[in-house]
Length: 545
Image 1 (cartoon, rainbow, N blue to C red):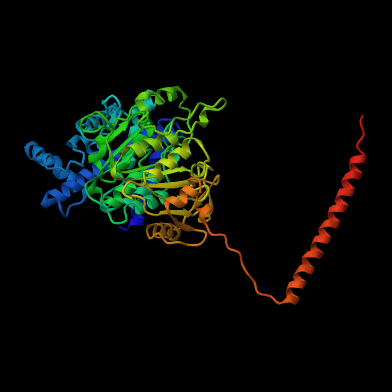
Image 2: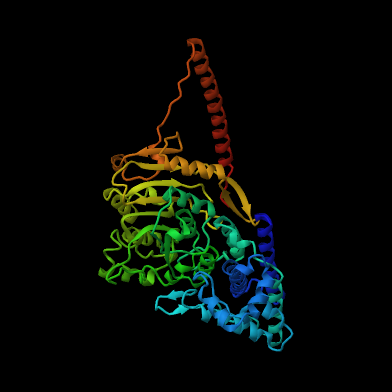
């Protein structure tokens, strides 16, 4: 089975699960995303466990999934316990009564929904040490909750669970586990696309794959080893996942924090799909600005990271915490200041400036960061934005900027740029790029206009930036002194060379040009006088009544 067939089958199963929700009155309900993601994840973990058995038990190598499940069910208790001991830590450990066929064969039993709920909860509790997300208070958010609770009518609960089990029992993920990041990125985007229309206080759930790819390939052109990756406003984790893939999933540990429960649930799913289960204990559900939870070994300061990527929210009302964040306790981290509360619209508070300062503070001595910012940040003439730009130049940690096309996010018309920070840059020249004219405008879902970059355009951005190639009206390479002389502007357009075209012509040609210009001007002036006369004439007809 080829990749396209696997993707088609996987998407069809997701559509079937959504259809079940719709048929039971849960389409577009607030609980729909939990049902879909939890059932999908249960299916994924079940099939991955069977795939693990095929890999670890020689006699299972040539068996299909149903045959392996049958063999495992018939295995002695002692042999099964011994097998579980050897299961990879990134694979959830399942009891035999957790298998999907076990549920499928009991669909006609009374209170079937209780069996399904109990199965999911038991899987979650059995694997809570690894497959959980922390809250700020250090309690663990388990993998699954009972799903029948979302159906209000008691008499419909059994049929609802039967329909869900029926859909996942008829699909196989057998061929999925050999796929890589790009496959799962596509599946994940499809899985959450209907639930990405609202966003949590500090996160949008999905950053376009094109931006994630550009950031990852610019930050890590040659891979890396034994490094930490952090996102303080992680959303669904698109940026950290892309960067981890570029580094090598086994060469890095991911750390994130986000205030949104929903986005953290998406992120957990994303990490499990991409074989980054060992990073799950580092996923924290909490307010990053007020209570950053990733601390150093001594617990007396924040942890410092090798790589930080983030697409933080740009404007959010954080007026309740504004004065706290401006207090003495936070001054070292928020060195450039805290935005004031607007008199009218508190939702316009520029919270991205807080995240940007937090990111700069959280980098280790040779750390690298990439942050999505509003393009207006690049040229703001005063205030916190300019103080941050001055700091980046003074500390010689600015690597470059890429200004993206408008509508690169379908959900916002704000023009965005990617700010690249590198504490090892030590005053080297800076790459400034204007990619705003790239891309093709498309309608997403027939509504929002979005700009899509082609693979060739993405590669051009990456290659030109990494090679620091100068190209007219596209990319310039400037010194920190050049930036100081331009009032700390990070906008590429302000450094482009203005070219005047010279055209050779004879004296007769020159005189003819002047004559043509004069004739055109005379005509325009005449039209202007006629229009002026007509306006006065019409104005004279206006009477007071």
